[in-house]
Every structure is written in C-alpha cells, then in structure tokens.
Amino acid sequence: MDPQNRPLNANSAMAEIRMRIAADADRARLIPMINAAFSIEEFLDGTRTDEERLAVAMEKGSILMAEDRDGKLLGSIYMESRGKQGYLGMLAVDPAEQGRGLARMLVEEAERRFRNEGCEEIEIIVLNLRRELPAIYHRFGFVEAGVTEFKPSRTLRPGIECHGIVMIKKL
Image (cartoon, rainbow, N blue to C red; front, top):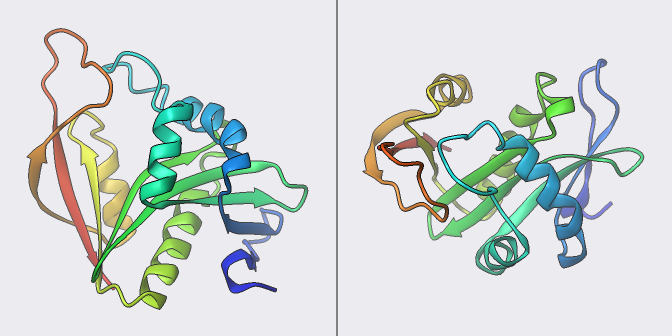
C-alpha cells in the first residue's frame, strides 16, 4: 500500500487505524470534528476552524487524518515542513474517541513523516490557558523552549490574556 496512506495497527482495544493526508473533499468532515475537539476553548469566540481557514492551512501544509477501518474520521493534526523543522498544530481527536491513544498515534505518524523528509526537530505551540497540554506533550517527548505572542484567528474574550508556549522535540 502507498506509504503515505498505510494502515497502522493500534493496540487490541482499537480497530485498525488508517492514517492519510486529507484531500479537499475531506474538509466537510474535518471541520465539525476539529471544532468539537476544540469546543473546550471557551476563552475564544467562535469556532476553531471553518472552510476558509482550513483551506488556507491545507495550502500551506497538510492535515494528517486518522480513520477507522470503516472510514469514520477519528482525529487529525496539521503538519507543515519548515526546512529541517517540522511544525505540528491543531491536534484534534473526536471527543467520543478521546482517551484511546489516538493523539499519540497521530503525533508519532507525523514524526515518522517528518523524519522521512529530513526534519531534525518538531515544534508545536500550545496556549498557556490550556494548562493540561504541556504535560501531555511532555509525555510525547516535547520540552518547553520558550514563549511566543499569541496571534489569534478568533477574538479572545474580554479580560483574557494569552500567550503561546513553544515546545520542541528532537527527532
């Protein structure tokens, strides 16, 4: 099978998972799943993505999708190659599928693809208001490398201050 669309065998608790790069036709399925996964970000107005924002992201980088054997969308992650550095963002797992290891599977598959492209490290930026995220990414092997200004595509709620925590993983 095409190495970009290879099936991955998950642990016994999960069915066979297929990872592939999203096509334009997948946006209609990706948008509601991503927005559901990010609905906990109540400090921002609006939704995490829409047709226009996702189309722009897919032109700049790619969306790696996880599907079960029946084609049900389980999760996704944004990937962008920046020379020797890969960038990950917008990691989303369908809320009904969370807690089953899909986030780790998506990150590991993205790492594999970045290694194949010659990347030496991966960067991800998490928001300081999502206090649970640094610990999750630490478990995936990322370390904090600094802070950056948050440039939201959505409006922050009044009185909220936010910045990005830059996390890096050497490959």
